Image 1: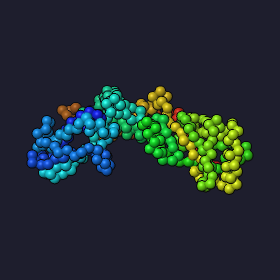
Image 2 (image 1 turned 135 degrees about the vertical axis):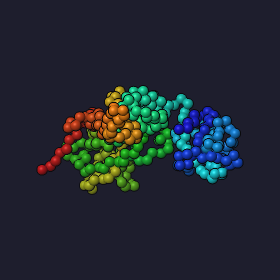
Image 3 (image 1 turned 60 degrees about the horizontal axis):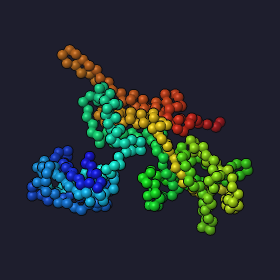
Image 4 (image 1 turned 90 degrees about the vertical axis):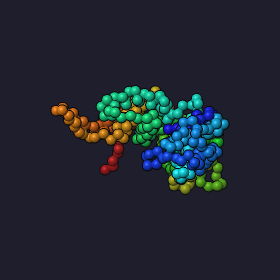
Length: 369
């Protein structure tokens, strides 16, 4: 995948193809190149007319060369952009994915630095697989990085946990709030319903957060759905938390807030019904240091990335090769490889263990008579 280092001059050589074959571009053709955002909505560079005698260009084989100045690349934000090549003879438009990187900031996923993990995967787990089921297979760095990112996302979904500390807002954040995060991931966790039993009798307020483990609770406030009623901030010293399981309990500990809260609660209780989306929580949750606390998680992601490589290569489930009286059998059961990953995630079959239990606790189902 072509790469541009932000703030440095860049020369990109790309091959224009159609139906998997290079397209010969006539010497008299007018060929232009321009960078756009990946959705195509925003132009990120001026249109450039390309020359057929540029160093490295070979139009007869579809190879064109695009040059960008340091000033032009300095205007780009890190991430993926789209390079659009247009030609008049033949008349065509071809689009390419280009990665913009910072010179000092590594390309990384939630848990891995690209250069390091790709080299590690190629040198150990992929090398072992190549000796058995992937004999002769070759994978580019871009492909392996894509498999690692895909495996990481799949396991995060299966475990239902943010793999890194993630900021959660009750409403879509403002541009200023996003900028203040400094690149930290964020998401939206809508407000929680107020139940009439929340403070009734001997009960204390109790919330079970949708995301866990809890790292930091920055703000909790009651929001009554009426324009004449204000917001009621819960003092931080009221909060008692079980961070692993995402439990927040409200224990009154300071007097200045009791009167306004009682006024709000009396209004809520007077209705005697659940009030939707009335408890807003702004917090940070996720795995604080997965490499330190759950090294088996990283191992599972790497194993799953290799399994995806095997699946993409589509090896035969079984077969035999014979020549000169010699025979060799081949059997590949990808399901068995996935079972190895599942054992790390959920424990051996019939158990209630693995990473799922380590992160979320023992799962149980209670069935009424």
